[in-house]
Amino acid sequence: MNHFKKLIEYYSEIVFPVTCACCGAPQEKKGEYLCEWCKNDRFERVYGNKTEVVPEKIEFVFSMWNFDKGGYLQGLLHDLKYNFLRGVGEELGRFTARTFLESYRHLHELEEANPVIVPVPLHKSKKRTRGYNQARALSRGFSQVTGWDVLDSGEVIRIRKTRTQTGLSSADRSKNVKGAFKIAREEVLQNRFPIIIDDVFTTGATTYELADVLLYVQKGKAGIVTVAKA
Image 1 (cartoon, rainbow, N blue to C red):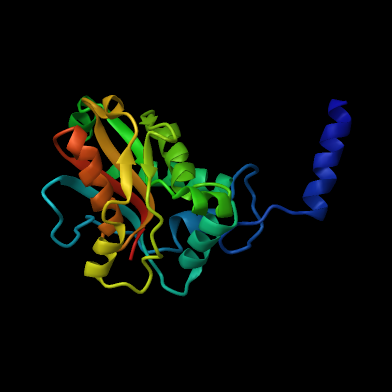
Image 2 (image 1 turned 60 degrees about the vertical axis):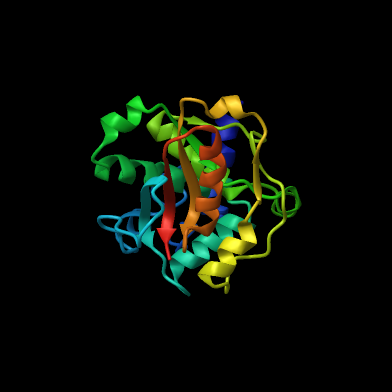
């Protein structure tokens, strides 16, 4: 049976070769979705992660790559969001986590703060349409590297369906997500440092609003981690 399974896998790789989910190049490493070039060299890194003035409640905003409107990264993140690329999301989460751990200077203090990973939740109607939440896939990969817990699905919910943030001004983005989130059980956040995970950081309206809700329970600060910064 094992020999037969290996034979099927061998011919499957010939007929359906594994390619990079980003650029389409043949993959040399089995079980990986992104080629080494796309992970390490194709995109511009965000060095220093200096953002515009952020609210006092935000301890840090970390993004791995600069967003490339109309480029490979935009295409990859679009596919991640709408084409159920769970494996790609987890791999991006792992790579983002390794990049974060290598660059964050106050790791010891962060570990002592008992961090918990909070994926930005989708409204149930959007989750039904897409089939999954890409932020949760990213969070799972991030957790696999850091060892930090991911808040269970349903603990923080999106109670209001919002329109897409694309094309909205900063003020309109904030208004659009106002009151969109709710915590199901407050005790799950007590004595925890929430790290909010999403795919793209633009103005921060969504993650700031979510941080407000999280920190209403757990007074203190929150961190934000995304794959890209627009």
